[in-house]
Length: 341
Ligand SMILES: NC(=O)c1ccc[n+]([C@@H]2O[C@H](COP(=O)([O-])OP(=O)(O)OC[C@H]3O[C@@H](n4cnc5c(N)ncnc54)[C@H](O)[C@@H]3O)[C@@H](O)[C@H]2O)c1
Image 1 (cartoon, rainbow, N blue to C red):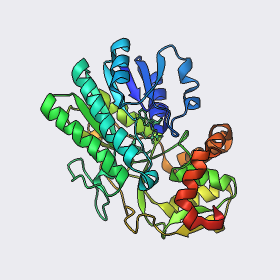
Image 2: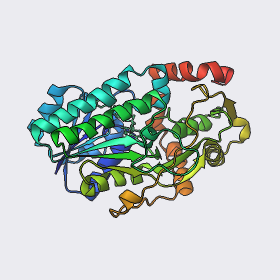
Image 3: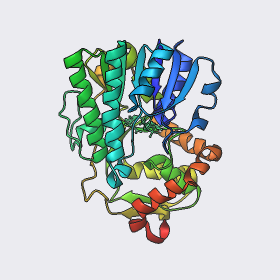
């Protein structure tokens, strides 16, 4: 296999690069636009491996995508490239449509032209929307509630149509909320860890009773590789850990592990006018029937993640010092955090 991994300089994409290097003998070609969320320092070790090549560029640039596929003899594509932050999409969603919808179309066109053997498209459980009781299965309706999840649903629907209309050999995974090392420090867990390390308050929406299902990035990457190798064309697979926690439960572990007390919690109103998804939950029976299972225990791995951020300030401090980061935090949290910003 020669795998084109798009978005490989991001959080889960880089975990997938590490997994492919250790668990397969594939050649690995990474295409990444290096947006604010992409970071070459994450790939420092990987890029020393002669099996790995990196190309900067956007998935919506057909010339770049097709040039790489032709020159490198790409046989498989795994698409992680995305604008991925729900909160940023509340401020501006145009870039999400460009990458998460139009970019997927360009990849599908390249699959047609070059007869790619398999496209694995990485999607999210957020396309299902929110569920109060029970669990989503892969046949649950797609009912996204946010501009981000709507853009991911748009990408998925194009995949579905391309499988049916053009016979593109594509498989989709829908992953749960993911945590672990190399996570850009604007997403809930690394945002809170980095703030708590600095003794700042963490903003919790409402009463913090929203439920999320957390999966470690190594398990998420493992599920994606399993679906790439064993998934059936045209099918979607949930990749989760069935490990539901309220946001407040997660925050309490982070407080403990950073040695801070509850005075560091600041509850703020939900920026989505009360529409913040209440609960995500999904079954993973379909992928487990193909022989996959997540391995990382949540609480221990979350504590390890906190320790990783304490030990790797060189990785995240430059990211939180950029003007773009400060601008986003101020625009999104300024009105509610006020002097605690
Ligand atoms: N993080 C989660 O909790 C989670 C959960 C389920 C699914 N997902 C999905 O997994 C994928 C990866 O998520 P992540 O958390 O690693 O995201 P991330 O934001 O950390 O990384 C995204 C990567 O894509 C790159 N990128 C962005 N636009 C691009 C473009 N137009 N062309 C090429 N590269 C581009 C960025 O530079 C970055 O390296 C996304 O598709 C996301 O929707 C994420």
